[in-house]
Image (cartoon, rainbow, N blue to C red; front, side, top):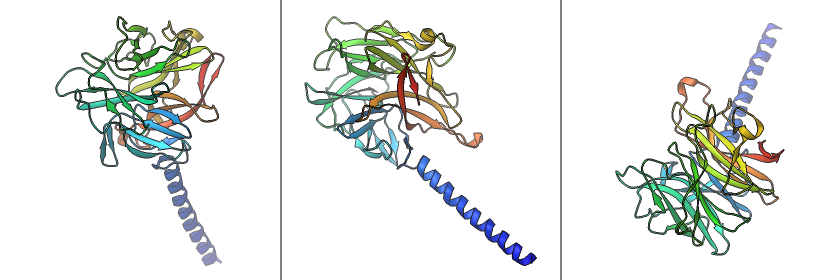
Length: 335
């Protein structure tokens, strides 16, 4: 009798162990594989812009190495927001004015020009300042061709994280950008996107260090126009490294040019953050907003996976995450 019981226990233990291994493998594939059944793309894909063209989604990220290959601006594609695959380099030929740091690309389609427009930042050699550039393509996959000279340059990293926008109320073409502990700003662009409108000057919209946390540095602007209101999303204040402290914040206005009221001031809160770290993800931020073919709204952003062993935590990989988002009582709510 004891022998029979012992054999049953042994077999049950073996079966349980096998099932546990299979379940762990399935969860790992589902949550962390490059082809995933949840809205996670588990490669280094920081500062993501996601757009939809017909029934295909395109995602663009800051320069980096994926599966051993270097990309100036990697572009990934998906048909369902669940399975993503790298499709190539949107900017295979570097512009003459920059040879590194192709950060935070933003892509939009201009229906009047029938062109896809790419904005990004870059820097050359030992120069000490970032520049903003613009490139054009007939295809969302690229290749995008730079116009040949930067839009604006400056010291440090003030001129990064561009977001281009056609104001639905005025038709004006606007460019938002900013970082380097300076305010987020906006300036009107020419009809062909290649220069700033003559006589125009940048206007400051949101200033850093207005709240207790997350905004000593602010960047990563995205504007979403919803029912007559302009929602300005931005992130702060430290995206990377062991001292990460990053989140998505929001402000709103009745004009694309402001003034913008932060959610903290509008709702009498301590913080304007709507996406913050949790037990699974560190430093979520630098978002984009887009809709699916049915009109459902999503927010895409990057975040750092939390390692189960704090001693083995790394900060080099910022993966693409996507969640649903809606507007309730005048402010966005992330699902």
